[in-house]
Image 1 (tube, rainbow over the protein chains, first blue to last red):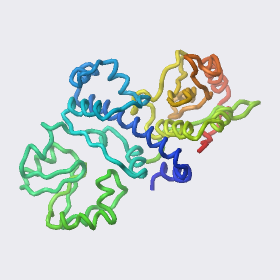
Image 2 (cartoon, chains in turn orange, red):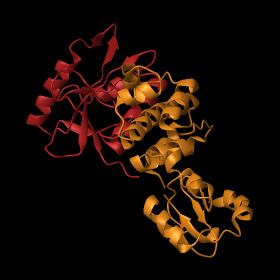
Image 3 (cartoon, each protein chain N blue to C red):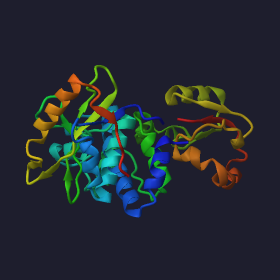
Image 4 (cartoon, helix red, strand yellow):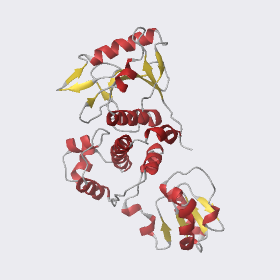
Length: 195
Length: 130
């Protein structure tokens, strides 16, 4: 189990405390993801600022864990500049803490539309951390080359190797959520890609 | 994930763990923000999160900038043991009207760091106040 969650369990009994802590996690993760996305696209702050139609000093302030005045409209502009969709969701505290703890360049990285395999091939059906493969071996090998880590799954969704969760999607595939999704995936045998 | 970096508190030979005393006096909301920043440092180190450490103008002394009704500016240093993946919290401070409280906080912190380098027993593992 998470060392951080163990530490926070008694502290989070207090409502004000857990909300303040989670808000700081949000600010930290947004600033970090903007930096990760910008750097993986080899963009300078000036380039990104220009694409997001803002001034570089403003972007510099936003790309900082101190910044807390986020608005959805600003985030939309940044999403557009990265050619990504913006997803704003309500989350359980445990998910926020686990995401924060597992935060890394890999977990924050996202493909722009032009590099998204779902839209590059009609035969690839993929989610952020989990893909079911329906294509042939040659296409699979090509995908493996672009995605890096692939894990093979034969016999269906229930045979995903058990391990500590590394993403919301993997967590969702455990427990009750797994049962709900079995119907959707029960015929989707083949290769499971875990990012 | 295990914490990668160790957080210590500076301990004054006479007054003890002043950082802990400062933390105890904070409001709950402020303590939550402070603890989140310290957890960020412990888990991700100084390189992952942009702007987590801010310079103070004093060599080797950094501050955490934590905004709110009260502007927290805890002073800390990396190490200071050579090559260790650690931070030492030296002094709890606030920023009020562009001034530090206590006045000259970075300089005070720098002196504490010097004392610590001379005697590395002047620190304890960070005593978290939840």
